[in-house]
Image 1 (cartoon, rainbow, N blue to C red):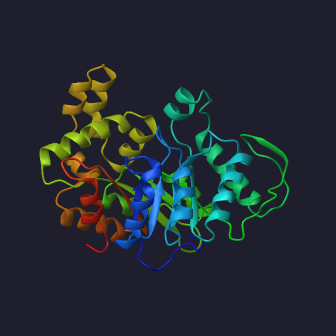
Image 2: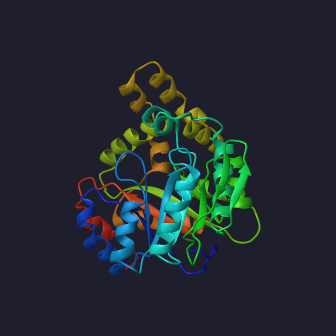
Length: 325
């Protein structure tokens, strides 16, 4: 995982699944058997992002591990460095740290922290982490915080790759200049081309994408699920601005208007089918695999579908979407 721009095909999946963490060993072993190469955790309102990976590090040494993402606001920079170094020590050469600004809801409303200057905060934490992972003493005044005398006493043999979650040109360009790769979210396969064009930087970069996947041929049900997810995310300002940049401003204007007026049902109904079909992969297992492959053809190096099993057993979905299927 520490070498960006690998040429071997990568087949990721989002974890943890909606089952207890202590039951995940069988699932992680199944993923290896089915040809998955990567697991990418998330950190929202369920498990933290690191615990599932720590379990996988011990249970399944064949899997690459990544977190998408650890928010740069909710842990102090030194603690984040310690946690990432411990994961890299537990899974040498297999762990990648994804960081990002997260959202006002998570940072401010849930954790009581000021969500200020997210671009600068992400940049500063990224620079701090890169310095800290060398084992050198970090004595620096960044624009968003100051650190005095931190030195990582247990430096991993293989420092983790560090990826940056990015939506729009500024953060994408930062990922290209200063990170080992970028993490994308909530975009269509066609949108990948536009996002990847902004990454730039020197040398190849990994591009991770979380792809929301509802593997059902019941189109109405898939779209209903997709509308609820889209409404939940696209009324967060950062994601709203992202969709405007991608060219969906007019298509989503009705949804934003009704949501602002408190009409939640009307907001859902105002989301056009084409937006749902762009942002949510759905269909048969074969159709879903083809759509996920399109993300890879357009520049994603590590697709990490998040399976939403509606009307289908989770294990059937994991098997049906597997590289070996």
